Image 1 (tube, rainbow, N blue to C red):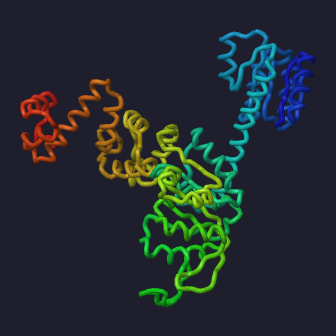
Image 2 (cartoon, rainbow, N blue to C red):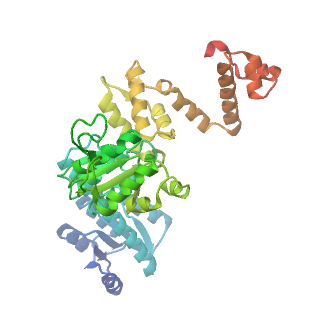
Image 3 (cartoon, rainbow, N blue to C red):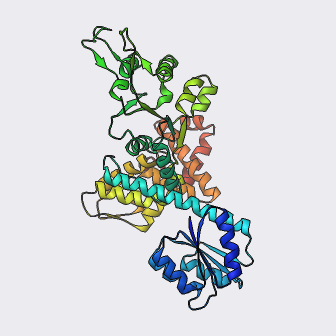
Length: 445
Protein backbone atom coordinates (compact mmCIF):
# COMPACT_ATOMS: atom_id res chain seq x y z
CA UNK A 1 0.00 0.00 0.00
CA UNK A 2 1.24 3.53 -0.81
CA UNK A 3 1.29 5.62 2.38
CA UNK A 4 2.05 9.35 2.56
CA UNK A 5 3.41 10.82 5.81
CA UNK A 6 2.82 14.58 6.05
CA UNK A 7 4.48 16.07 9.16
CA UNK A 8 6.76 19.05 9.73
CA UNK A 9 8.68 17.14 12.44
CA UNK A 10 11.57 15.29 10.69
CA UNK A 11 12.03 12.88 13.61
CA UNK A 12 8.36 11.90 13.48
CA UNK A 13 8.57 11.39 9.71
CA UNK A 14 11.70 9.27 10.00
CA UNK A 15 10.22 7.14 12.80
CA UNK A 16 6.99 6.44 10.92
CA UNK A 17 8.73 5.90 7.59
CA UNK A 18 11.08 3.25 8.99
CA UNK A 19 8.27 1.51 10.87
CA UNK A 20 5.93 1.34 7.87
CA UNK A 21 8.64 0.31 5.40
CA UNK A 22 9.46 -2.63 7.65
CA UNK A 23 5.80 -3.67 7.29
CA UNK A 24 6.23 -3.79 3.51
CA UNK A 25 4.58 -0.50 2.56
CA UNK A 26 5.83 2.06 0.05
CA UNK A 27 6.21 5.30 2.01
CA UNK A 28 6.26 8.89 0.70
CA UNK A 29 7.04 11.89 2.91
CA UNK A 30 6.10 15.58 2.94
CA UNK A 31 7.28 18.34 5.31
CA UNK A 32 4.18 20.52 4.96
CA UNK A 33 0.61 20.49 3.71
CA UNK A 34 1.33 22.06 0.34
CA UNK A 35 4.00 19.46 -0.47
CA UNK A 36 1.60 16.68 0.62
CA UNK A 37 -1.10 17.93 -1.78
CA UNK A 38 1.46 18.08 -4.60
CA UNK A 39 2.47 14.44 -3.96
CA UNK A 40 -1.17 13.31 -3.99
CA UNK A 41 -1.62 15.14 -7.29
CA UNK A 42 1.39 13.34 -8.81
CA UNK A 43 1.38 9.91 -7.11
CA UNK A 44 -1.20 7.16 -6.39
CA UNK A 45 -1.65 7.37 -2.61
CA UNK A 46 -3.92 5.00 -0.70
CA UNK A 47 -3.50 6.38 2.83
CA UNK A 48 -2.14 9.65 4.22
CA UNK A 49 -0.96 10.14 7.81
CA UNK A 50 -1.50 13.85 8.21
CA UNK A 51 -0.27 16.12 10.99
CA UNK A 52 -2.92 18.70 11.77
CA UNK A 53 -0.59 21.65 12.43
CA UNK A 54 1.86 22.24 9.59
CA UNK A 55 3.32 25.31 7.85
CA UNK A 56 2.03 26.67 4.52
CA UNK A 57 -1.12 24.55 4.64
CA UNK A 58 -2.75 23.07 7.75
CA UNK A 59 -3.72 19.43 7.90
CA UNK A 60 -7.42 20.33 7.71
CA UNK A 61 -7.02 22.37 4.52
CA UNK A 62 -4.60 19.85 3.00
CA UNK A 63 -7.10 17.05 3.63
CA UNK A 64 -9.88 19.03 1.95
CA UNK A 65 -7.71 19.54 -1.15
CA UNK A 66 -6.65 15.88 -1.19
CA UNK A 67 -10.29 14.74 -1.03
CA UNK A 68 -11.09 17.07 -3.92
CA UNK A 69 -8.30 15.43 -5.94
CA UNK A 70 -9.14 11.86 -4.89
CA UNK A 71 -12.35 11.25 -2.90
CA UNK A 72 -11.28 7.65 -2.27
CA UNK A 73 -8.07 8.52 -0.43
CA UNK A 74 -7.99 7.37 3.21
CA UNK A 75 -6.64 9.69 5.90
CA UNK A 76 -5.54 9.51 9.54
CA UNK A 77 -5.32 12.95 11.18
CA UNK A 78 -2.55 13.20 13.79
CA UNK A 79 -2.27 15.96 16.40
CA UNK A 80 -0.62 16.76 19.68
CA UNK A 81 -3.50 19.04 20.59
CA UNK A 82 -6.35 16.57 20.83
CA UNK A 83 -9.84 17.81 21.57
CA UNK A 84 -13.36 16.55 20.94
CA UNK A 85 -14.22 19.53 18.72
CA UNK A 86 -11.11 18.96 16.63
CA UNK A 87 -11.89 15.26 16.21
CA UNK A 88 -15.43 16.02 15.07
CA UNK A 89 -14.27 18.63 12.55
CA UNK A 90 -11.64 16.41 10.90
CA UNK A 91 -14.08 13.50 10.72
CA UNK A 92 -16.50 15.77 8.86
CA UNK A 93 -13.73 16.54 6.40
CA UNK A 94 -13.42 12.84 5.64
CA UNK A 95 -10.67 11.59 7.94
CA UNK A 96 -10.99 7.90 8.82
CA UNK A 97 -9.18 8.15 12.17
CA UNK A 98 -8.14 10.84 14.66
CA UNK A 99 -4.86 9.99 16.42
CA UNK A 100 -2.99 11.79 19.19
CA UNK A 101 0.76 12.08 19.69
CA UNK A 102 2.73 10.22 20.84
CA UNK A 103 1.49 7.53 18.47
CA UNK A 104 0.89 4.00 19.68
CA UNK A 105 2.59 2.12 16.83
CA UNK A 106 0.90 -1.28 17.37
CA UNK A 107 -2.48 0.46 17.43
CA UNK A 108 -1.55 2.43 14.30
CA UNK A 109 -0.56 -0.78 12.52
CA UNK A 110 -3.87 -2.42 13.43
CA UNK A 111 -5.80 0.54 11.98
CA UNK A 112 -3.71 0.47 8.80
CA UNK A 113 -4.39 -3.26 8.40
CA UNK A 114 -8.12 -2.57 8.64
CA UNK A 115 -7.78 0.01 5.86
CA UNK A 116 -5.91 -2.56 3.75
CA UNK A 117 -8.81 -4.99 4.12
CA UNK A 118 -11.34 -2.31 3.13
CA UNK A 119 -9.27 -1.32 0.09
CA UNK A 120 -8.95 -4.96 -0.97
CA UNK A 121 -12.72 -5.43 -0.69
CA UNK A 122 -13.31 -2.25 -2.72
CA UNK A 123 -10.98 -3.48 -5.48
CA UNK A 124 -12.64 -6.90 -5.61
CA UNK A 125 -16.14 -5.42 -5.69
CA UNK A 126 -15.07 -3.05 -8.49
CA UNK A 127 -13.76 -6.05 -10.45
CA UNK A 128 -17.10 -7.82 -10.04
CA UNK A 129 -19.01 -4.73 -11.18
CA UNK A 130 -16.74 -4.32 -14.20
CA UNK A 131 -17.33 -7.95 -15.19
CA UNK A 132 -21.09 -7.46 -14.94
CA UNK A 133 -20.90 -4.38 -17.14
CA UNK A 134 -18.99 -6.33 -19.77
CA UNK A 135 -21.20 -9.44 -19.53
CA UNK A 136 -24.84 -8.48 -18.98
CA UNK A 137 -25.84 -12.14 -18.73
CA UNK A 138 -27.47 -12.20 -15.32
CA UNK A 139 -31.27 -12.01 -15.09
CA UNK A 140 -31.05 -9.56 -12.17
CA UNK A 141 -28.45 -6.96 -11.39
CA UNK A 142 -26.71 -7.14 -8.02
CA UNK A 143 -28.28 -4.37 -5.98
CA UNK A 144 -26.82 -3.07 -2.73
CA UNK A 145 -23.83 -1.42 -1.10
CA UNK A 146 -24.25 -2.62 2.49
CA UNK A 147 -21.16 -4.00 4.27
CA UNK A 148 -22.68 -7.49 4.14
CA UNK A 149 -23.22 -7.24 0.38
CA UNK A 150 -19.76 -5.83 -0.30
CA UNK A 151 -18.16 -8.59 1.76
CA UNK A 152 -20.20 -11.18 -0.16
CA UNK A 153 -19.06 -9.83 -3.53
CA UNK A 154 -15.47 -9.77 -2.29
CA UNK A 155 -15.69 -13.46 -1.35
CA UNK A 156 -17.36 -14.30 -4.68
CA UNK A 157 -14.52 -12.59 -6.55
CA UNK A 158 -11.91 -14.70 -4.78
CA UNK A 159 -13.87 -17.94 -5.03
CA UNK A 160 -14.59 -17.53 -8.75
CA UNK A 161 -10.92 -17.59 -9.70
CA UNK A 162 -10.37 -21.01 -8.08
CA UNK A 163 -11.21 -24.42 -9.59
CA UNK A 164 -12.69 -25.89 -6.40
CA UNK A 165 -16.25 -26.97 -5.65
CA UNK A 166 -18.44 -24.41 -3.89
CA UNK A 167 -21.33 -24.87 -1.46
CA UNK A 168 -23.69 -21.88 -1.21
CA UNK A 169 -25.86 -21.68 1.91
CA UNK A 170 -28.61 -19.27 2.77
CA UNK A 171 -32.29 -18.88 3.45
CA UNK A 172 -34.91 -19.20 0.73
CA UNK A 173 -35.01 -16.16 -1.52
CA UNK A 174 -31.51 -14.85 -0.80
CA UNK A 175 -30.31 -15.35 -4.39
CA UNK A 176 -28.26 -18.55 -4.32
CA UNK A 177 -28.76 -19.24 -8.02
CA UNK A 178 -27.75 -15.68 -8.86
CA UNK A 179 -24.49 -16.04 -6.92
CA UNK A 180 -23.78 -19.40 -8.57
CA UNK A 181 -24.18 -17.80 -12.01
CA UNK A 182 -21.95 -14.92 -10.93
CA UNK A 183 -19.18 -17.30 -9.81
CA UNK A 184 -19.37 -19.01 -13.21
CA UNK A 185 -19.37 -15.68 -15.07
CA UNK A 186 -16.30 -14.42 -13.21
CA UNK A 187 -14.33 -17.67 -13.49
CA UNK A 188 -12.17 -19.21 -16.18
CA UNK A 189 -15.10 -21.35 -17.42
CA UNK A 190 -17.28 -18.35 -18.32
CA UNK A 191 -17.38 -19.28 -22.03
CA UNK A 192 -18.49 -22.85 -21.32
CA UNK A 193 -22.01 -24.00 -20.33
CA UNK A 194 -23.68 -23.25 -16.99
CA UNK A 195 -26.07 -26.15 -16.39
CA UNK A 196 -28.56 -26.06 -13.53
CA UNK A 197 -30.28 -29.00 -11.83
CA UNK A 198 -33.02 -28.43 -9.24
CA UNK A 199 -32.62 -31.51 -7.07
CA UNK A 200 -35.97 -30.93 -5.37
CA UNK A 201 -37.95 -30.81 -8.62
CA UNK A 202 -36.85 -34.08 -10.27
CA UNK A 203 -38.57 -37.37 -9.30
CA UNK A 204 -36.22 -39.85 -7.64
CA UNK A 205 -36.71 -42.48 -10.36
CA UNK A 206 -35.66 -40.01 -13.08
CA UNK A 207 -32.83 -38.27 -11.31
CA UNK A 208 -30.05 -40.66 -12.32
CA UNK A 209 -31.07 -40.34 -15.97
CA UNK A 210 -31.32 -36.56 -15.64
CA UNK A 211 -27.83 -36.31 -14.18
CA UNK A 212 -25.95 -38.97 -16.15
CA UNK A 213 -28.16 -39.56 -19.22
CA UNK A 214 -29.45 -42.86 -20.58
CA UNK A 215 -29.09 -45.20 -23.55
CA UNK A 216 -31.88 -46.01 -25.96
CA UNK A 217 -34.13 -48.70 -24.51
CA UNK A 218 -32.69 -48.37 -20.98
CA UNK A 219 -36.22 -48.19 -19.58
CA UNK A 220 -39.79 -47.77 -20.76
CA UNK A 221 -40.05 -44.52 -22.67
CA UNK A 222 -36.32 -44.24 -23.42
CA UNK A 223 -36.86 -43.99 -27.18
CA UNK A 224 -33.41 -42.59 -27.90
CA UNK A 225 -30.06 -41.92 -26.30
CA UNK A 226 -30.01 -38.85 -24.06
CA UNK A 227 -27.05 -36.98 -22.63
CA UNK A 228 -27.23 -36.07 -18.96
CA UNK A 229 -26.46 -32.80 -17.24
CA UNK A 230 -22.88 -33.88 -16.46
CA UNK A 231 -22.12 -34.28 -20.17
CA UNK A 232 -23.91 -31.07 -21.10
CA UNK A 233 -21.82 -29.15 -18.55
CA UNK A 234 -18.49 -30.44 -19.89
CA UNK A 235 -15.86 -27.71 -19.60
CA UNK A 236 -18.24 -25.53 -17.61
CA UNK A 237 -20.19 -25.47 -14.37
CA UNK A 238 -22.82 -27.85 -13.01
CA UNK A 239 -25.07 -26.15 -10.45
CA UNK A 240 -26.98 -28.51 -8.14
CA UNK A 241 -29.66 -26.44 -6.42
CA UNK A 242 -31.29 -27.74 -3.21
CA UNK A 243 -28.74 -30.55 -3.02
CA UNK A 244 -29.98 -31.39 0.49
CA UNK A 245 -33.10 -32.91 -1.10
CA UNK A 246 -31.12 -35.73 -2.75
CA UNK A 247 -32.06 -39.22 -1.45
CA UNK A 248 -29.18 -41.18 0.07
CA UNK A 249 -29.03 -43.70 -2.78
CA UNK A 250 -28.53 -40.89 -5.30
CA UNK A 251 -25.98 -39.22 -3.04
CA UNK A 252 -23.76 -42.29 -3.36
CA UNK A 253 -23.94 -42.19 -7.16
CA UNK A 254 -23.13 -38.49 -7.22
CA UNK A 255 -20.20 -39.11 -4.88
CA UNK A 256 -18.76 -41.76 -7.22
CA UNK A 257 -18.94 -39.40 -10.17
CA UNK A 258 -17.16 -36.68 -8.19
CA UNK A 259 -14.50 -38.95 -6.72
CA UNK A 260 -13.59 -40.82 -9.89
CA UNK A 261 -14.48 -38.18 -12.46
CA UNK A 262 -16.37 -40.91 -14.33
CA UNK A 263 -20.02 -41.88 -14.73
CA UNK A 264 -22.17 -44.27 -16.75
CA UNK A 265 -25.38 -43.54 -18.57
CA UNK A 266 -28.42 -45.49 -17.37
CA UNK A 267 -28.41 -48.69 -19.41
CA UNK A 268 -24.87 -48.05 -20.60
CA UNK A 269 -21.79 -50.25 -20.27
CA UNK A 270 -18.87 -47.87 -20.75
CA UNK A 271 -17.66 -45.14 -18.43
CA UNK A 272 -17.75 -41.52 -19.57
CA UNK A 273 -15.85 -38.52 -18.27
CA UNK A 274 -16.72 -34.84 -18.02
CA UNK A 275 -14.66 -31.90 -16.82
CA UNK A 276 -17.05 -29.86 -14.68
CA UNK A 277 -16.88 -27.53 -11.72
CA UNK A 278 -19.58 -28.34 -9.16
CA UNK A 279 -21.48 -25.56 -7.37
CA UNK A 280 -24.19 -26.64 -4.95
CA UNK A 281 -26.75 -24.74 -2.92
CA UNK A 282 -29.05 -25.56 -0.04
CA UNK A 283 -31.31 -23.66 2.34
CA UNK A 284 -30.93 -26.52 4.81
CA UNK A 285 -28.01 -27.00 7.21
CA UNK A 286 -26.14 -29.92 5.65
CA UNK A 287 -23.97 -30.31 8.75
CA UNK A 288 -27.05 -31.12 10.83
CA UNK A 289 -28.25 -33.46 8.10
CA UNK A 290 -24.88 -35.25 8.24
CA UNK A 291 -25.21 -35.63 12.02
CA UNK A 292 -28.73 -37.01 11.57
CA UNK A 293 -27.59 -39.49 8.93
CA UNK A 294 -29.64 -37.85 6.15
CA UNK A 295 -26.64 -36.64 4.14
CA UNK A 296 -23.43 -38.49 3.45
CA UNK A 297 -20.46 -37.01 5.29
CA UNK A 298 -18.00 -37.90 2.53
CA UNK A 299 -20.20 -36.19 -0.07
CA UNK A 300 -20.58 -33.13 2.15
CA UNK A 301 -16.81 -32.69 2.39
CA UNK A 302 -16.45 -33.28 -1.34
CA UNK A 303 -18.96 -30.50 -2.09
CA UNK A 304 -17.91 -28.11 0.67
CA UNK A 305 -14.37 -27.23 -0.41
CA UNK A 306 -15.32 -23.55 -0.47
CA UNK A 307 -18.39 -22.26 1.36
CA UNK A 308 -20.38 -19.07 0.92
CA UNK A 309 -23.21 -18.08 3.25
CA UNK A 310 -25.61 -15.51 1.84
CA UNK A 311 -26.85 -12.93 4.37
CA UNK A 312 -30.63 -12.65 4.78
CA UNK A 313 -32.18 -9.35 3.76
CA UNK A 314 -32.85 -8.38 7.40
CA UNK A 315 -29.08 -8.28 7.92
CA UNK A 316 -28.56 -5.80 5.09
CA UNK A 317 -31.48 -3.43 5.50
CA UNK A 318 -29.42 -0.59 3.99
CA UNK A 319 -29.99 -2.26 0.61
CA UNK A 320 -33.79 -2.34 0.86
CA UNK A 321 -34.45 1.19 -0.53
CA UNK A 322 -32.25 0.49 -3.58
CA UNK A 323 -33.95 -2.88 -4.15
CA UNK A 324 -37.39 -1.27 -3.92
CA UNK A 325 -36.34 1.41 -6.39
CA UNK A 326 -35.09 -1.29 -8.75
CA UNK A 327 -38.30 -3.33 -8.56
CA UNK A 328 -40.54 -0.28 -8.91
CA UNK A 329 -38.65 0.78 -12.04
CA UNK A 330 -38.90 -2.76 -13.36
CA UNK A 331 -42.60 -3.43 -12.76
CA UNK A 332 -44.42 -0.09 -12.56
CA UNK A 333 -46.52 0.73 -15.61
CA UNK A 334 -47.05 4.33 -14.48
CA UNK A 335 -45.20 6.94 -12.37
CA UNK A 336 -45.29 5.74 -8.75
CA UNK A 337 -43.45 6.78 -5.63
CA UNK A 338 -43.39 5.62 -2.01
CA UNK A 339 -44.25 7.84 0.92
CA UNK A 340 -41.61 8.12 3.65
CA UNK A 341 -43.96 6.25 6.00
CA UNK A 342 -44.40 3.33 3.58
CA UNK A 343 -40.66 3.10 2.98
CA UNK A 344 -40.09 3.09 6.75
CA UNK A 345 -42.49 0.15 7.16
CA UNK A 346 -40.81 -1.79 4.34
CA UNK A 347 -37.30 -1.21 5.68
CA UNK A 348 -38.28 -2.47 9.14
CA UNK A 349 -40.08 -5.61 7.91
CA UNK A 350 -38.21 -8.90 8.61
CA UNK A 351 -38.65 -10.52 5.13
CA UNK A 352 -38.72 -14.25 5.95
CA UNK A 353 -38.75 -14.78 2.16
CA UNK A 354 -35.85 -12.34 1.66
CA UNK A 355 -35.30 -10.56 -1.69
CA UNK A 356 -37.82 -12.76 -3.49
CA UNK A 357 -40.50 -11.79 -0.97
CA UNK A 358 -39.63 -8.09 -1.33
CA UNK A 359 -39.99 -8.41 -5.10
CA UNK A 360 -43.43 -10.01 -4.72
CA UNK A 361 -44.51 -7.35 -2.20
CA UNK A 362 -43.60 -4.62 -4.68
CA UNK A 363 -45.45 -6.43 -7.48
CA UNK A 364 -48.60 -6.81 -5.38
CA UNK A 365 -48.49 -3.23 -4.13
CA UNK A 366 -48.02 -1.75 -7.60
CA UNK A 367 -50.91 -3.83 -8.94
CA UNK A 368 -53.41 -2.95 -6.22
CA UNK A 369 -52.50 0.68 -5.46
CA UNK A 370 -54.87 3.10 -7.21
CA UNK A 371 -52.93 6.35 -6.97
CA UNK A 372 -49.40 7.40 -7.72
CA UNK A 373 -48.33 7.57 -4.06
CA UNK A 374 -47.88 4.34 -2.09
CA UNK A 375 -48.88 4.79 1.57
CA UNK A 376 -48.60 2.30 4.46
CA UNK A 377 -52.28 1.36 4.00
CA UNK A 378 -51.44 0.19 0.46
CA UNK A 379 -48.92 -2.40 1.67
CA UNK A 380 -49.91 -6.07 2.13
CA UNK A 381 -51.60 -6.90 5.47
CA UNK A 382 -48.77 -9.12 6.71
CA UNK A 383 -46.29 -6.26 6.34
CA UNK A 384 -48.52 -3.78 8.18
CA UNK A 385 -49.34 -6.31 10.90
CA UNK A 386 -45.67 -7.18 11.44
CA UNK A 387 -44.81 -3.48 11.70
CA UNK A 388 -47.54 -2.94 14.30
CA UNK A 389 -46.48 -5.92 16.39
CA UNK A 390 -42.79 -5.14 16.11
CA UNK A 391 -43.03 -1.57 17.32
CA UNK A 392 -45.71 -1.84 19.99
CA UNK A 393 -45.06 -1.99 23.72
CA UNK A 394 -44.97 -5.42 25.35
CA UNK A 395 -48.63 -5.26 26.36
CA UNK A 396 -49.60 -4.10 22.87
CA UNK A 397 -47.71 -7.02 21.34
CA UNK A 398 -49.42 -9.51 23.66
CA UNK A 399 -52.83 -8.05 22.87
CA UNK A 400 -52.15 -8.15 19.11
CA UNK A 401 -51.19 -11.84 19.29
CA UNK A 402 -54.20 -12.64 21.51
CA UNK A 403 -56.62 -10.89 19.15
CA UNK A 404 -55.21 -12.78 16.19
CA UNK A 405 -55.60 -16.11 18.04
CA UNK A 406 -59.23 -15.28 18.84
CA UNK A 407 -60.07 -14.35 15.25
CA UNK A 408 -58.27 -17.45 13.92
CA UNK A 409 -60.22 -19.77 16.27
CA UNK A 410 -63.53 -18.13 15.35
CA UNK A 411 -62.80 -18.44 11.62
CA UNK A 412 -61.87 -22.10 11.99
CA UNK A 413 -65.22 -22.83 13.72
CA UNK A 414 -67.39 -20.71 11.38
CA UNK A 415 -67.80 -18.24 14.26
CA UNK A 416 -69.46 -20.77 16.56
CA UNK A 417 -68.34 -19.32 19.88
CA UNK A 418 -68.77 -22.51 21.96
CA UNK A 419 -66.40 -24.48 19.69
CA UNK A 420 -63.93 -21.57 19.41
CA UNK A 421 -63.75 -21.33 23.21
CA UNK A 422 -63.00 -25.08 23.42
CA UNK A 423 -60.12 -24.73 20.92
CA UNK A 424 -58.69 -21.81 22.90
CA UNK A 425 -59.11 -23.55 26.26
CA UNK A 426 -61.23 -20.76 27.76
CA UNK A 427 -64.88 -20.43 28.74
CA UNK A 428 -67.45 -19.02 26.37
CA UNK A 429 -68.01 -16.13 28.81
CA UNK A 430 -64.30 -15.20 28.69
CA UNK A 431 -64.37 -15.44 24.89
CA UNK A 432 -67.30 -13.02 24.67
CA UNK A 433 -65.52 -10.65 27.05
CA UNK A 434 -62.36 -10.63 24.96
CA UNK A 435 -64.34 -10.21 21.73
CA UNK A 436 -65.88 -7.10 23.25
CA UNK A 437 -62.50 -5.89 24.52
CA UNK A 438 -60.90 -6.12 21.08
CA UNK A 439 -63.98 -5.09 19.11
CA UNK A 440 -64.11 -8.39 17.23
CA UNK A 441 -67.20 -8.66 15.04
CA UNK A 442 -67.93 -11.13 12.29
CA UNK A 443 -68.49 -8.34 9.77
CA UNK A 444 -64.80 -7.37 10.07
CA UNK A 445 -63.69 -10.55 8.37
